[in-house]
Amino acid sequence: MQLKASAPGSLMLLGEYAVLHGKQALICAVNKRVTVTLTPRSDQQINIESPIIGSYTTSLQHLKIEKPFQFVLSALKHYQFKLRQGCHIHIDSDFSDQLGLGSSAAVTVATLAVLVAWSNMKIVPLDLIRQGCQVVHQVQGVGSGADIAASVYGGVVGYQSQPLYAEKFAVIHPITVMYAGFKTSTVEAIQYVHHRFSTHTNIFQHIYHSIGQCATDGIQAIRQAEWVKLGEIMNIQQGMLEALGVSVPVLRTLLDHLRSHTTILGAKISGSGLGDCVIALGHVLNQEQTNQHIPVEMTLQGVQCEKV
Image 1 (cartoon, rainbow, N blue to C red):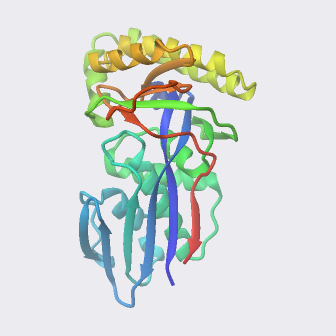
Image 2: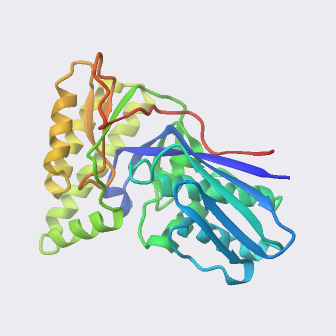
Image 3: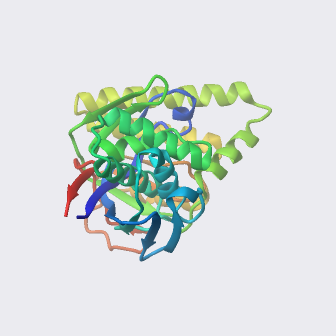
């Protein structure tokens, strides 16, 4: 018997940086997924393989969190006390981990879901989010968990880490996503911003409070299906990301290009910036597909698990 779980990637609509300080965020799941297939073994060996990353072998007793499978190994350690035998884990992904589509969250949620099913446990979505956040924090020390919530629920999700709040809106809207061609890790970007504002803490607090207000207003716009208003708020928040210093010239060029089209309601960086993706609300009509364009759409489908 095999168990298979898949979880969607995600993109941040509103709330970057502020969500790390207890403010709200708005995030959407996308139709690129990570799939984790688990095959039980009769011994204590743990095998992990990915056609993209490679393979890794250890034992249940000697689990350590090591790259490149650090999120999978952390999820295994989270449930180590429940496991009585080893397993083979195969990972397939619809997208590269360099594209800023929340691959770490997706593989974390899919791995936790397949381990929950293998252990014959029941879990509610909020607890799966909590566990996903614990796994991510164990690996990288920081992270809001917003992308975890999107991978669990699908759709558009309003999120706050403390106190934990996650609300799924079963709505989708056309989006256009473009890639800068390079990525700076979330941890590095956060460190960059903290260093930049180390002697301007009051200014930083005002900026992240305002970003949090953008997310709160964006959640209200989603509740009322006011997509034009959401696009306006995205444009406003982009100005605040500029103030944080995380919008590099290539990102500005992409945003100017997107906003020049009347079909685009708003556009901003998605995520921590210093490279990575920009997201626009709406489709650019009759556009030639370039290697900067990422063919991706919102999806209502969150994590799914099945026996195969």
